Image (cartoon, rainbow, N blue to C red; front, side, top):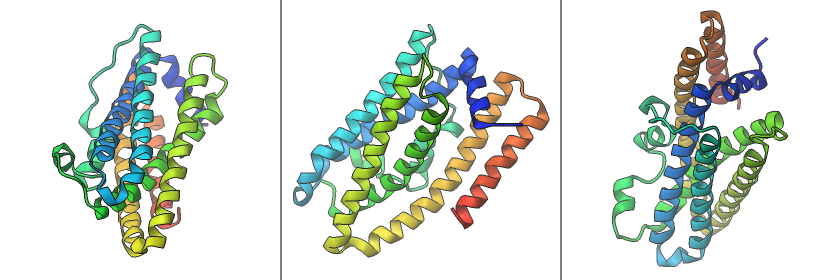
Length: 235
């Protein structure tokens, strides 16, 4: 029987699969760190009180990227380039989730609506990150090599999720509720499609690295499609 614990154990035990997993994770965290750092620097004057928390979010994501790279170095491994079809962060941006990098590179303050959209997008993506880290802690929280790192990242992701939720509640009270509801729904529908496609790509690559039988790969792909259907229609 296939299990999440068993699949991740296979990835952890194989250097090539572990290197791909950590490289994808480190790249996504570093990208999120840069984005949050730029947003903190460009927060409009009317919302400057949010800047320290956004900056802290970015600093934590930078830290997570360094942690995944440190796990690689501990095994004597180097990061590998992230295949474009597995780059969750960039695929989300290409579909309109997250503030465009072109906008973030400018030295122009963001608008209040930009910040509302950013926090709404973050509420969706941080939910995914928090859920995934909860799962990893359940499976490997006591792992001698990974346990401390994933517990630290899990705690940070829970804090990020709580911060996004708390700030959105305040913005609802300030009259942004209709925009927040619209952006949350649009973001969630896009995110679950991107997550499905990235999961299929990552599992396909892992299957080749780990030489999974065709039946096993097909069963995993079916499970990913099933999870997407659940999230789309009932999750």
